[in-house]
Length: 394
Image (tube, rainbow, N blue to C red):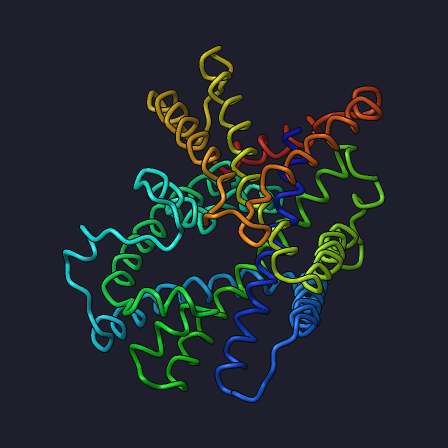
């Protein structure tokens, strides 16, 4: 169940990332060419272009991706400063009372409790996928030391930056109705601040570079997850093949990309149809986190957690309990419709889509896996742990 939920969720995360890259590009084009008429099939073709380029980069220039990720990380920090300075200096300001005490909802929900929790849900999409680092752990030196620390500090740094930028956005967002009616609010926000289409396009284009880098990394992560899931016997062994020429799981790279390209055809029916797939990503990944954390908590309480280079120590149990409560709390509101009254356009399809994944996983278990599934590759895990122990001693 954990494997199928995680794999389906990561494929949908990849679809969402490529879709955002395509839409961001088309927003910049539409803003600079007023006569351009956007069609749904334009989005599909651009998604195809991004997907194919990402696939070939993971195929031919995988060695280059870590350096691109590093440069994107530096650009990420620089852009945060640029956006903060431009918005705070040039944009019209709301009062502090509006930012911290104001009460305004565009969702149609009348009670503050539901509106507050749904507001949190909208932000969680930016904080899923931190398990991507785990998917490449077999290709990481000192993985037992490097992976958890990279996850921990990236979340801490980005959480602080996100809170700061949200507050800045609230101060400088301008007219809320105009912003919510905009097809791409970030472009409207930048236009309000700079008063320049070229300036706003440049800011958005720089942000697009970060999106491209993140999605490029998602291809690498989803491919390694696909490879491991095939190697463990759940997906066909055909996708566990590692190319001796390229030294990467070539078939596992292209399988998620091909699936995303097929899913992108849902855009022909409108964005609502494609959003059904996006609904799976956040809710699905939080389910996978709940399962993993629950078993970790069980292992702690039964004394089965071994010493490791990274350890929460005595804080492990309370942190795991808090994480479970927090994740379960969010999961409840992730299946709420974001807007009311509920229509086909504003329906939240996360629960029925996830139910389909659950049913598929159960069918696979009773038909195939409980008899033939080999389970996790313990020998390989022992080799990774042994490699980490040697690095720690060194």
